[in-house]
Image (cartoon, rainbow, N blue to C red; front, side, top):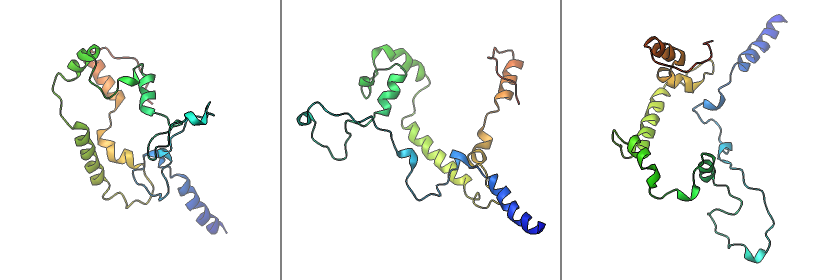
Length: 167
């Protein structure tokens, strides 16, 4: 009887240890992606149904939110100034940020390099007995040890902000 109980409890115990979280780089679900759903503004009754704009299939509507504009407002910017030239008030910022040169298409290059890196790291990750956090596994060598870095800068005599003790 104990042997049967052990056979039942052992897989349950091992199953409870698996928690891949949001960083599992595989998409094992064939259903819809819940992160693609955007909340909408609350519905409001218009003052006049004749004053509503005509429907535009495939385009935005009155209840759609504009996440980019909301983010710009949250950081104190002007959402109407997006997409245009850099305002003159930001010229010094742009000059400082680009003082070592600007690589055109850097975002695309980095995205392709990261996709190749993850593809190379994912070759042999399918053969696992116990579920692991694939994000940490793939980027382990690129992680920064914050405590060691702070200690190194302090030993070099640099002023560093206080931080909670290492656990």
